[in-house]
Length: 517
Ligand code: NOJ
Image 1: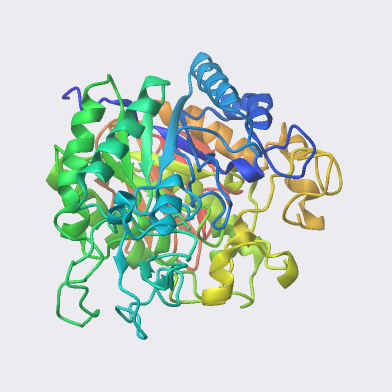
Image 2: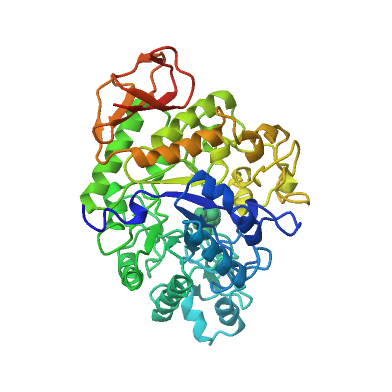
């Protein structure tokens, strides 16, 4: 095994903290860094190897912090830079690494660069963005990432580009100052002990300077332009100046070969597996997805990742309880019927799957508690800018965590949480689930602990087309029954862990087990 294969990011369990919703220490209804510090024990008990922090920087919060006004400080709502540094130190003391989130495609419209750019047409900062002269028609008819148009007018009437909201002007990555600035930001956080960087919207940075329209069969004008790879090669050189630092890309890319380009040996260390996240709960599609993932990553020597949920997508307890179990932004399933019991049963099985496939596994905060999407947030309480543009809100997966007690705010805060928590979450709190062997939390704790006893390698076991079964080394197997009926277990010494009750020697449907062979 090469040094690279044994690096921490290759098989880590990485827990995504969404700071607004983890724990509130100062009673304003919004989570913060001191809240995370106070509840670090939860992550230690869970056994995770690393935390990825969604953005915590000063921000007007037009897109929940993905509109960054200053990459080298912390928003007062979350705390201070000193608190962030203390969190990094305390996490390290608990054996937990920290990944910070960097957003290179755009900045906040309050960022000093953009403020300077709109203050004067001669400002050099204007070239850091995509400005086009005032005209009646927008320079392009591109549809933005949240839906809607991608150009807004600056105070002087000129157009500027924003692939997301108007408060998130896109940077011009052709400009050397932009490149230099972000390399410096990486060093800023590496110098403060960050172990990794999650790269937001990693494939969007470059735009075709001619600004052509999006046309079938022609190269996309703002997605996955080849020049982006030069940036990540440079970032890799920066990361390599430090020991054991990882770059992890948010790359939504249906074409596998274009996706793995980001993972070439001199580029990013890893990328989120959205193919797996969006896959239907279906034996044929899931097997194909796993094979595709393993083949693609082997081809570039990068570790696969397994992701079920994050702060942008419908929680998988809800997804797996619907008739259509896929996820994609283009397919809005909000409000379609959900069987939460079925979704929970499948989510439990999915946990054993995602925690035993070779590679790194991401856990989105609250999935270890079996939280479902809150689909009952009143329109006037919704915060997500996507809702106005696309009719789908991501707020339902961003609801504050339930820690204790029988009613909201469930120990999250002393104030009313920034998004409402369902009344039915009283049995989903950390307190209620701790010590209950049948709880989702204890399943995750046991699985993360036992995960260490899996062997290396991966081989499918033939248990029929609708049963996903594989070994990890000579002594460990995972079996997931996706057929409609109970199936016999393969020969084994002991059952290490099961996602649900077994039926004698039979594995019920939508249930997974880990076996000692
Ligand atoms: C991806 C992030 O995960 C999402 O939350 C954000 O809205 C967009 N990028 C824009 O930064």
